Image: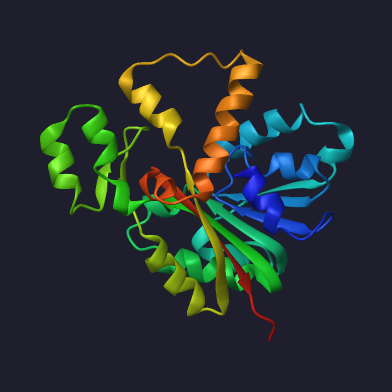
Length: 235
């Protein structure tokens, strides 16, 4: 996802708002790369984790990060009406009953010409995970379902690229590209294969394959989640 973002974001030190950014896993690397990052999250516990992780960044990168407590569905108000060169919302929509209010806020917070980045569950691949876990009845039901118990043990809801793209277009944000996220690594995990995160050569090789699959059909269509990027039109 970092590769996807760098390909579409304006150059640093452009401003980035990470809505529901949690501990900063996606946005802190952007701060390290020179972007001015604001992490907005409604959970004090997650923001505490972000503060802990922030201490591990170089001093110059730490200076480029602002942590802000607030509800993403009121992001415009929480950010004081500020507009950002890029607005991220990764792994959040699936926990909302209706994605539209959040998407509306993301688009409002983006500056003219700004990038909106959304990662959420892929409704078209809902049967993959339960099938790989040999939960056949669940897999059969998943072909027409939008919700399931996710990897965190919490009920989640999935969307399609087409649905979220339409929500963006209705708010003046034109979809640019979409990618699949988590494909072969998921399959290996569900099959019981062990991946060694300390093997840097193997990790790099895995990442290269995942990145290539994220860009290609039919592979990206089978990914557990998708990453959609759009650009807001000028007023």
